Amino acid sequence: MVRVKRTPRAGAVVIEHVQGTDVILANGHRLTSFGGCDYLGLAKDDEVHAAAHAGLDFLGASASASRTTTGTMDAHVALEATLAEYFGTESAIHVPSGWLAGQALARALAPECDAVLIDDLAHPALADAAVLTGLPILRYEHFDAAAARRIAANNRVLVLTDGVDVALGTTAPLRRLAALVEKNRGHLIVDDAHAAGVLGKLGRGTIEATRAAGPRVHLVGSLSKAFGGQGGFIVGTAELIVLVRERATVIAGATPLTPSAAAAAECALRMAADDLPRQLLRANAARMRAHLVRLGVAVPQRGAPWFAVGAGRPARDLAAAAKLLQRRGFLVPHIRYFGFPAGGYLKIAVTALHAAAQIDALAAALDG
Image (cartoon, rainbow, N blue to C red; front, side):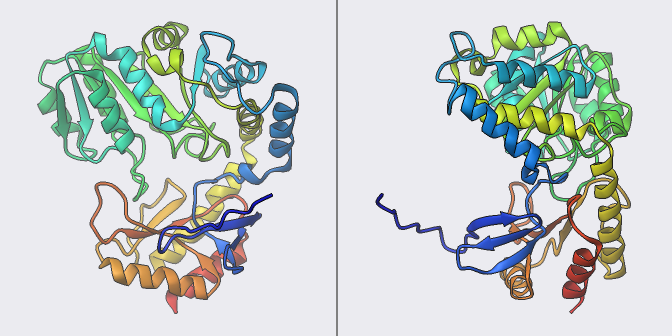
């Protein structure tokens, strides 16, 4: 076999091996990782890995066709049934990536709305979804429900928002946005990629956590964060999922998840129904939060298990800080994300798998 020389982009961190909370980089360095989004540690679970192998062995490496022809596999049907059960809805459907979930649902709901009203710091996936509806696009200030109500006026608006701020971890004003679409006969799409599996008593995300559920409030999310797999999903009433199947071209034309990815995600969802991993995650997040508060870092008092450090500082300073942490044995990525200051921030993400001693050691490194 010919080995192709790998040439990562300048500054890229290349991971060759993952062992629990540790990663081994391409340069051979072993680090304790506080990056990524595997919040419940399910991507590394042996049972999830076994499910992926079974999907590969029984159903092959690809579905090899769209859902409307011969591309629906047993693993896909099981995944969608488990998604509906986990989120307590009548029905569910998966799509090849979390990026596409909001787009598919927005396409389905667009004919019932006059305009799209989008948070001005919404994830780019939602910005793409807004464009694909073909409707006029209105924007409101980040997580400002009063501004959203003012700009919507009397239009039937399709409101697009993230459930949580992907950098700061703060929660969107979902109850007030839900009241807006109920009054105006519009719809609210909440992209809960980072909160599903993490927030809420049952891990159903920000709609559950904020008690914002309603007939015009809809949830989309990702299987590649807390659920440790790959793909995206839409959950809701049977009528809503029928609309998605009929109107979203990605359902008709795209090859669905590989059977192994679907089987792994289905297994992870069943495991995520157990609250123990979330209890461990909450405890670890609280420990990290307490350390950061002691160090003078402004963080939300509760909520998401990730923290932005150094926002607003020059990019070169943050890049140097990330490299210093690597030399001290920690992987904390320097994130330069859409819609945030040019310098970016250091993102500390804790998981259910981190030990208290690892969190304490990172805090000591930050303090030093």
